[in-house]
Image (tube, rainbow, N blue to C red; front, side, top):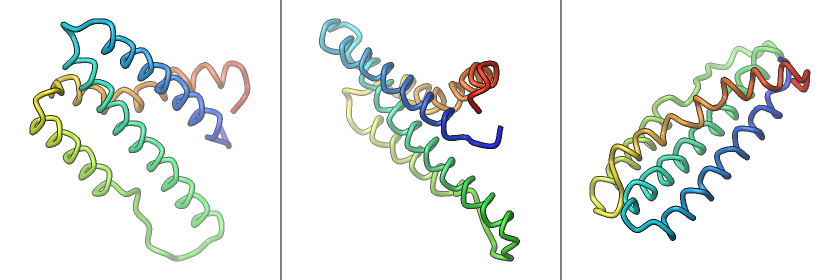
Length: 125
């Protein structure tokens, strides 16, 4: 598991496919428009947080590998502030379901587990 890029790309692709399905569901099924929009908003924010965490992890590992004494962080405050911003947006605008938005925030991180297992079985990581 030296290279995380295949897992990040796999999670990004699966999340984008889910978002495409949600947008199609938003267009075709009028009764669940708030849920599909909320889930799509949560998936966008969750994917941004996931990719930001991947960048920070790369920087930390490079810092440790180069034996630099710089202080580092994984950007927890930035990621939690972005999640709070998205939930506040969902609360303020009535067209988004708050529950679906919060659930969508966690889906990309949870998708990393089966993607990592699948890619390790296929030996791509």
